[in-house]
Image 1 (cartoon, one colour):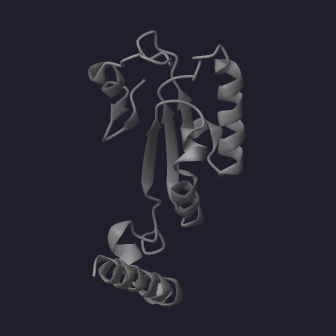
Image 2 (cartoon, helix red, strand yellow):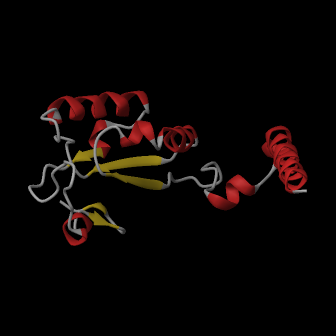
Image 3 (cartoon, helix red, strand yellow):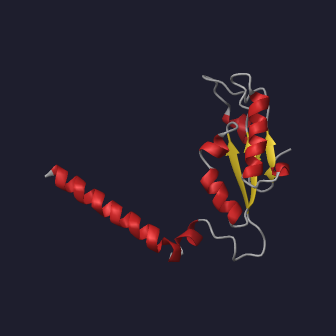
Length: 142
């Protein structure tokens, strides 16, 4: 009996996925969640905050591609250089290259190298220390 419930659940999920693929383009749910960026004359600002370089590519590139293709103004704040293995400068350069591919202007990228926000296994960052770099009304705090 359990296999029947699991099978029916999988079929329902599969059918729902097919409906989303074929009919999702006519839905307004995208605009309700994020907004499509086309209904306002001014670009909306979005700031991504990452722990270290490569997070933008590994975890957020689909969201970044969606937002840039819909004329959002993206900013990236990277809280460390990713220097756990002594490769911080290389990883920082790779982040610059990724921003070029993702169409994010380099002047809208900021990489921190704060002594209390160093990358490494077992390192615990202070919430207060990382929070002081993010200001919800003005973007980056300088």
